[in-house]
Amino acid sequence: MIHVSNPERELWPADGLLKDDLIRYYLEAAPYLLPHLHNRPLVVQRFPRGIEQEGFYQKNVPAGAPEWLQRCSVEHGGGKIVEYLVADSPEALLWLGNQACLELHPWLSRAGTLDNPDFVVFDLDPMERSTFAHICTAAVAIRELLRERGLQCYPKLSGATGMQLYLPIEPRYSYRQSRDFAEAICRRVHRAYPEITTLERRIEQRGGKLYLDYLQNGRGKTLAAPYSPRPLPGAPVSVPLTWEEVAGEAVKRGQFTVKNMLGRLEERGDLFAPVLEQRQLLPG
Image 1 (cartoon, rainbow, N blue to C red):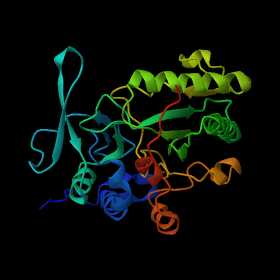
Image 2: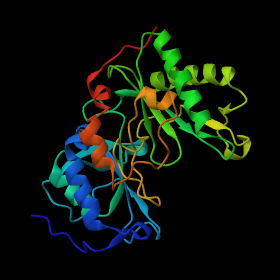
Image 3: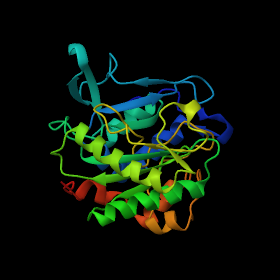
Image 4: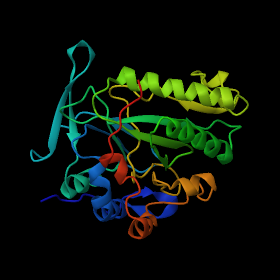
């Protein structure tokens, strides 16, 4: 039994969304959300007093957490052991909601194959001069380069300002291999669209252009899960898209939120299901 503390706590005050609303969203979205968290170490971002107060990231399962929560012990550099939560049940989501976890960041690999990611990811991070059209142009360009290699990828809005593409792969490659492959694709896109994209790591050197981030392909690096809320005004959600929506620029950033995401799920289902089911081999 989980006792929900302070269910009336305002987590998105300007939007009138309470902790109780977050928990209800997690439980109703559980059939779609849990498969994307299954057997993966989870990093969360917590906002105990709502998004207008400072939040913090949490990796270790906190002291006093229920014993029944699934855990995954991971050794990092220097022999440091981190005990991550693995959210494998609606009860775990309820507990996370009660902890005011507004952002869910699963690993790109699973327990048992932690050094071998299931996805190559392309994180399209807009700067001040970037438009949504620039993001969609780069996304379609990446898709076409992958299709030329017999590969399929799947887009989702980050829930913040950018877009992320997931290329599902066999968990046989190292993170270095997946990163090198993503870098090669991003360099091709940058050569084709140098006026709107950049590979510059330093923000001040990006010239306001769309950053093609391939460095997210690293052990322990994470992205917001599909259907994860984001701690931003409006309570936006990281939402999978169809390629028709991307090519047509048919979806606005922030359009899907904790308030209306379930309607889209009921209508369209899990557009990211192929990411979990499809396994592809990288060329070469």
